[in-house]
Length: 73
Picture: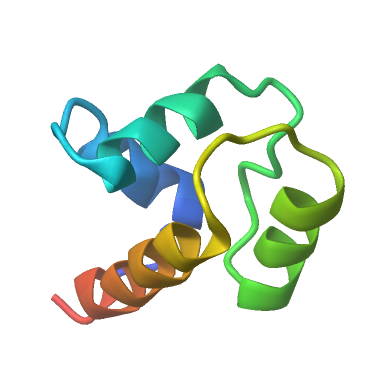
């Protein structure tokens, strides 16, 4: 099982031609993003309250679910 932060996973998603790729680019460009965080509540709280992302929270939810699956391999 991998021990990587959500941000490290997001770097693998950059360049996708979908909403998850767009969110990954916004996270990459956000210098205040909590880059070492792994916990859903920390990340979702940041996105909901501290950021100006244009993508809906459901995209984040789906991306976080993909992250948890990615960690297993």
